[in-house]
Length: 328
Image (cartoon, rainbow, N blue to C red; front, side, top):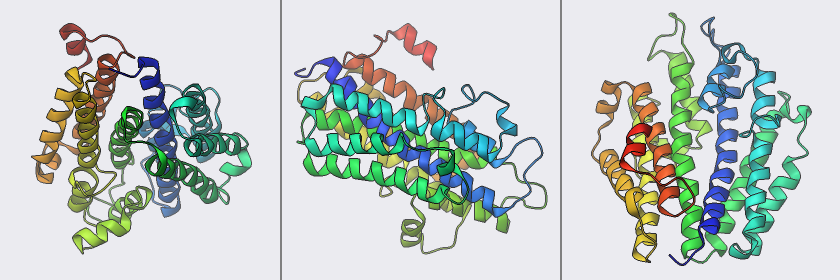
């Protein structure tokens, strides 16, 4: 391997943190749209509690997650310095990684990350207010889109680019599963069962939050249907946010690193297994297994893949058969 492991780690996490900011913006957008529907949610949960759970913030949120108000959830997701996965914290971590690897990224990439950090660190409670929230979400997504454009437009297609891309797609696979799983945590009351107009509206909101509403229409030429939405967000390889597309790209970049002499090890085999399973899975099988259970499994396996990548390339714990078994 020609690249130092600390450089590989810095670029991998730069890609992850910038992608995480984009995905947090999408989760916030989903929560905002659920909130606007005015649906009567089960008394034991609410849409913002669902967003916090999907964002993996159950352990960092200081109160009872299921009782979180929109104001409290948005503060924790965007501003809270005690939350290492808040938007401000993630942009700060991305900048720290970019600064440490300044010699491995282009000026355009560095400027995109630095500008994102310098602007979003000024976010305040006012930016999380209902009337300002759409603009705040748009800003977050514009900063991350600029970063992706600079990576694609200015980075050499070498190991540096490949580790950045690995981080991006590992994070995106995890985030897509979490976004779809929001629907599980938003419990519909009896008067709005599965397949009802309100249920369809919620799935439509998830498509919009994923930036996939127009693409869904182009592919299926059909109104929102639960089965088709699940197929599009998880299994359709042409959708850039689907699990299938993410694992296709993870496998491609691991294959490139392997062919260049950077030992792929167990992560390459894990990525092949995940890609092959997704390519051979039908949406009815996913639904039959239980969507929440399937998504939980995918979140665990994508996180295990990230650990395996770190182990293979020298910036994570060395995995043995015993430790791998314990992480399952």
